Image (cartoon, rainbow, N blue to C red; front, top):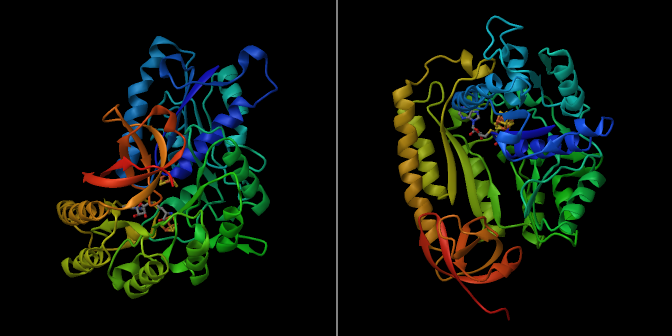
Amino acid sequence: MKFIIETYGCQMNVADSELIISILENYKSLQPEEMFEYTEDINQAQIIIFNTCSVRENAERRVLGRISNEISRKQRDRSILIGVVGCMAQRLGEKLNLKSNKRGIYPQIDFVAGVDQYEKLPEIIQECKKKHKFIAQTTFNYDENYTDLLPSRTNKLNAFVTIMRGCNNFCTYCIVPYTRGRERSRPVEEILKEIKQAGEEGYYDVTLLGQNVNSYRYEDINFPKLLQRANQIDSIKRLRFITSHPKDLSDELIEVMANSEKVCEHIHLPVQSGNNEILKRMNRNYTAEHYISTIQKLRNAMPNIAITTDVIAGFSGETEEQFMDTFNLMKEIRYDFAYMFKYSERSGTKATEFKDSVPEKERLARLQRLIDQQTIITTEKYKQKIGCVEEIYVESFSRKNANLLSGKTRDFKITVFEGDESLIHSFVKVKIIDAVGWTLKGKLIADD
Ligand code: SAH
Ligand code: SF4
Ligand code: F3S
């Protein structure tokens, strides 16, 4: 049976989809003709799985739109199964299917599996197929760490390695602690083995993943120590990690980052707001001053470090003045890039109890002001790179111009340059000669 997975949301979902592919493809106790086989062609798929995100209303709306588009396939071929996994599956469970609940969304959905149920997917699908009945399994299992499973990687050059799952922070706006459950760290040796193997298979750029990697702890190994050990693995060339929480970003981590050759000069450090009152109501547990001093420490230790962030505009009760604190903080820090969102109420989260919600129109207007300012800063940051020599991990031909090769700098900027196909999957040095939009243009320089 051929299956396809369409993935939405964060890198954690991308990594989980790779796990799901591996779980289904390695499922052995079946008749040969019933084996699961991954396909990227939806027209060939007999099972269509949506790995979903609940972080903002828009994210959910988009997936529901996609599901509704594909449902017509079932009218043509009734044997096609449609399944929903990921955060929306966890949040809505059987409500996704009308047959089991009057407030359901699509009666055509055949199965729903929550984030700790992926190892059961082969059985869920089998049963669903045989008995023609809807199945939803969404129980949390806080021991589930998907031990001893190697993901089936869909990206050819970069690997994501999950080091922890879940989140205990309960930022008041955020649905993730409810959809992902409690925090749990994977065993050190297992993570190191997975990184080593990824490198040996040619995935030279490895990103360690967790909702809050800084609070990783397994026995006496904390995140900086894990990073130090990962840095010693010969088979990989670059190491990255997402996401860091400002409250837990320690001096020890900054030191390890600065002294570990493979750890790239980039950190994603979501600030969310530049106002202390709002930060408090978001339950972020740091102040704007603390955040700025952390950035200074990072820049002192690594002068060329690229810094990216997430911010939310129009959180409940945010005044124009409080918003301006965010605007000014972003101007002061000068991020290389920022993911900016307008606040979206998520039912079940603490912030929905807060009064004084900012009108939708105003949220949008504030968001636009942040975007306008950041666009200028990002453009300037990219222009500053002109004249620098950068190491590029060459990934492919450029999507926009098939005559150019494309890859990333250590600080995560896309760079295109003229070169031969044989350079793909290697590291080269280029001199940056231009910055067009948010792409650097480079010129290959001879190795010395
Ligand atoms: N664990 C990560 C990522 C969380 S989700 C972290 O803590 O940074 C990614 C981003 O989505 C968040 O950083 C936040 O900026 C945004 N986000 C989360 N909930 C949101 C909501 N209800 N409305 C708008 N943006 C939200
Ligand atoms: Fe959500 Fe906060 Fe956890 Fe990030 S740290 S996943 S924003 S609750
Ligand atoms: Fe990620 Fe979205 Fe879930 S951001 S953790 S897929 S709610």
